[in-house]
Length: 368
Ligand SMILES: NC(=O)c1ccc[n+]([C@@H]2O[C@H](COP(=O)([O-])OP(=O)(O)OC[C@H]3O[C@@H](n4cnc5c(N)ncnc54)[C@H](OP(=O)(O)O)[C@@H]3O)[C@@H](O)[C@H]2O)c1
Image 1 (cartoon, rainbow, N blue to C red):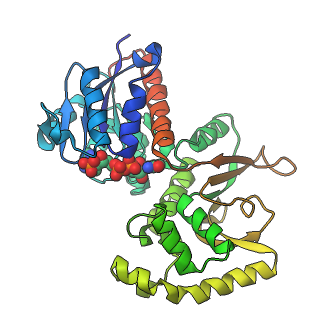
Image 2: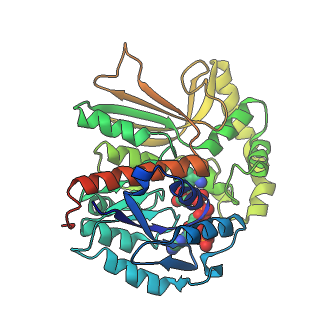
Image 3: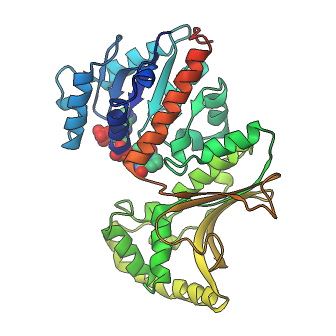
């Protein structure tokens, strides 16, 4: 049976790990897919018959030097690439999977076209699945969307939710510490650092985005919470979610340097909240909660000995309660690194292989 074509958008940290891993697949898995295109933000490589292994090894080596596809001989511009890619995912074309490991909105038109025409879509990029509900519906319409790496990186969180639902269980609540950055921050606060000291340390250690407010604002956690909620059938928009930011609005408009200088203005408020929690034997954690009352994202005071209170450092923890997994059975818990290029790349690769297998099993029939 012929292999499923793969078009891969975004060869950054995760994308390069994915490429490397796909170069050392077992022969049976390697035969299931054929990588026909790769792109970064500047340029692309594509070929109707599949990219040569030597070229891909060259690309991995080039990315290790932080260079672009534009530095490789034989590359083409993005306009020409997207024209070609749109033809690949037209109705009646051989089964193709579009993989998005960018952090961009620009890939959405190609993803939507692929989904509308019965092709596959695999995402590490959270933006498409946390866009509007109508975009979510359109991406899911053909049943060929996979997005495991968008929540918990390589941890099989969405796999577990899928298996629970397919076996007739009903998910009643999901709680999660979904940000390694904020996990690290709250561990530092618990160790006695001030808010401003903990933010500086997290930034120095490379845990935060260059502008730490991108993490402190809670939007990354909110996108993941929305994806979890939609995965269990909730219909809602990102704008419906109450999100508690970890800095006051008056520090929002500052430059990064100004924010870092004025972060100490938040120290007293945080220290008071920590003391209040400690007086009850509790600690503060930044949690996402999905349950019958809705979805919420923010700081919660939890007993030190509870599942979330006991977790220190940057690991993620997702706790799932269902009709079957409820008291006296403990909820299902998935814990481990929720970021990292290699584990995230592997999460994407598993989705690609599973989807390719399903598409081939459907007789590699022409898409709808
Ligand atoms: N890193 C993790 O641990 C992790 C975990 C879970 C999920 N994710 C998600 O995975 C995605 C990738 O993360 P990353 O850490 O690999 O980020 P990254 O290193 O910044 O890589 C992003 C890549 O996308 C490319 N790109 C940007 N816009 C593009 C466009 N319009 N068309 C084609 N390529 C485009 C960039 O090109 P240039 O190289 O030319 O800039 C870069 O190669 C993100 O959505 C992230 O949220 C990451």
